[in-house]
Image (cartoon, rainbow, N blue to C red; front, side):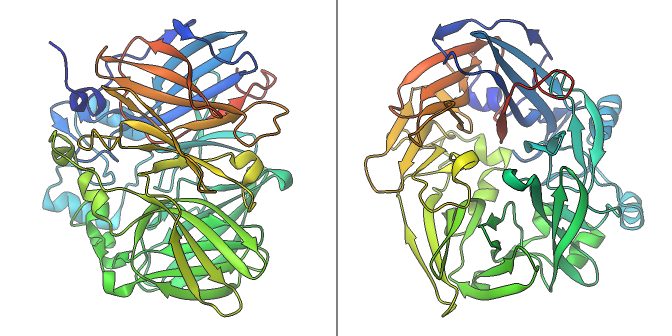
Amino acid sequence: MKKQVFELGFGSTEDEIQVDRLPIQGKFPDWLNGSLIRNGPGTLQVGDETYRHWFDGHAMLHKFNFENGDIAYKNQFLETQSYRVAKAQEAIVYPEFATDPSWSFLDRVRNVFSPKPTDNAKVNVAKIGPHYMALAETPIQVIFDPRTLATTGTFTFEDKLSGQMTTVHPHLDIKRNLAYNLVTRFHAANHYRIYQLKNGQNQKLISSIPVRKPAYMHSFGMSENYFILTEFPLVVNSLSLLFWLKPYIENYQWKPSNGTRFTVIDRHSGEIKARMKTDSFFAFHHINAFEKGNELICDIAAYNDARLIQQFYLDQLASPQTELDFGKLRRYRIDMKSLKISQETISDECIELPNYDAARYSTLENYRFVYAVSINENKRTGFYNQIVKVDIQGKANAHWYQPGCYPGEPVFVGRPGRQAEDDGVILSVVLDENTQTSFLLALDAGSFTEMGRAEVPHPILFGYHGAFFNNEPSKTGAS
């Protein structure tokens, strides 16, 4: 009996497997050599218990390795303390984004005085200095071997793990071998703290900004000279997190009358250069930010409010009539002299999990194309079911859609020596309700036509983020 897409995409991965050569339909580019590594939940069930939200579940890495025209595949649960204990006890043991363990009152009291942050780094992957990391909003990031996917260590921005959260979208300054990330520290006095890493180590505190009620921020912006914190009116009283009477995200409250505050910080001195408010809105993802004369420009996948978080609860997603809110590509312009802010909607396309050619166009004004998952206008209900290419210059957008197929985050990989911005390939892991399995899709980024697909012998749960890593010498990198 065929499973519905909800059961396939939000269930449990049965096996960890390794396939040396996936069957391929069509053709992948000959120049594509390296590994696409994806992160996301490998199971949303533990024993007889089920997590409540798409953002819960235990991390699983999926690796597609490209070499000499062949594509190998491997999937493996991330080896963490939270996964080992949950598997051994067949129960949810550590608190996650929207699910807490079945705690007694005494357990909750113990957690106040001896909190146990999860090491379930399930959201993103990045290469920071020499380290390949699985990234989480919680304080513990997990270092893994890109060849075997085995856990080799952990990383934290601060020594004290309780009372802090971070973003899963660090900014990389490849030319200077620098990485930056934002940590929110929850204490009697709360702070936003921006850290710099040089070659993946020697973390340096760049800025520490006090805040009364911290906002939930999944990402932040960076231009050539500034960091941009977009403080949405989804805020928390830190005492609520201290006593942890509800799952993490349910302690936050939507306060639209607060508006959304942009805080602009000098990348070099750490000083606040501007603070201004605009109408309330919400976003998970900054896309790009750049400077043009006196203007600081931020492109964001924006929503009018934070209802999407509620829509990602599994009991909501289980309904075939679910209609997810549309995120739209919105541009915010900050005049750094007058401190006035304006906005415009660049495209009415639904976008989420956005990507662009960040390797070449991060912090640059002349970037043109954004790739994202989307929802087909003729199949409005259900989950994300198409990929869209948005042309910021206002020319025709492009789409990939196939009935019964649900693509994941599109990852752009540029052709070596390319001249055109969209000279490359889009890679996306697609869940196919028709075949009850998944496949890796390759689209020509220019024409947006399908080039090929590599068939995976099982369904891959709906994940979040991934990255493509070029092959390196075996002593240091991916193979």
